[in-house]
Length: 374
Image (tube, rainbow, N blue to C red; front, side, top):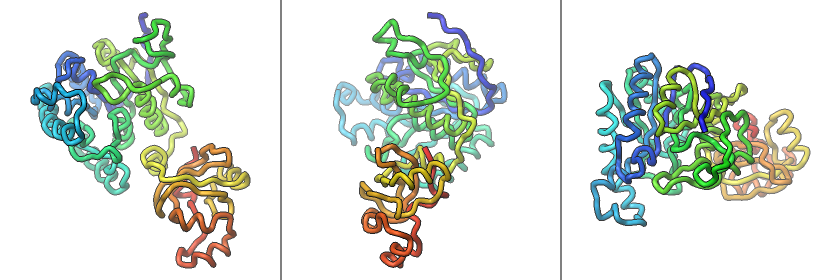
């Protein structure tokens, strides 16, 4: 099937994500087969006055190529994977840097580095300064130190965080297929191509299925998750076939062969985006019908009187989900009580709360300034 180019908005700054499948070209080690074309695209973008941030996988694959014994293992321990990443990350940087006649900078991020607000601001300032200096930032997750529970986990979602952090106009996610389809086109030749998406809902994730190739950790699902994060900040997100040079030639002319997820016009601000899309929920608060209505209509602060029950183990300051009695999520917010305290004042009036927990100095469970509706 021949895909027709779609005109997209002109862009000034883009984040481009390249996964392990393209980095290795299916060989299990770093290959220039596809990344040479991507490097050429980055060079042409800069010649045209456009800024690019590169999010690149491939550290473990690069490290594996130096360790024949580990290369033959199908199951590797966490220390082995971390060691391979440590070996491979400088090799990965060296491979990219040889394609450019301008300086490159390595940024290794972890989930902790973006979930902590101060660390996030510091990372953003560094990224902004690098772009001002005309440097190409090359970003990967810090797999050498991150433990499974505190990892972003895939570079599709990491690229979305970087796109928001860098205030990019466009997020380009390179895949090994042409874009989003109604079914996996590698398994179903009747799969229909989807050129544009204006709303990312549950049915879209159903189309995505599970994870993708054996080389990568992300499939189409993580790409849709990334698009959801980026588009909520107003950033257009595209999925292109990174194995096809014509896709990049068209992008230079603001044309797309692939799928576009349109950025929302009513984008949320940076802090609310951080609460909704970066922080992981530590529990849930269930509210009665009256409180649910007030939250949805007015975005008011949540008081204990409207809370019916709480679940999970959380501390004051943690992110929690606020749900109605049917379990539908209404909002995400930063809770001002820990689990035991909030459970002890559920349904109480403001005067009762102040009497029971006088040391807290207030009766607001989640302040409206620390809450984002979903």
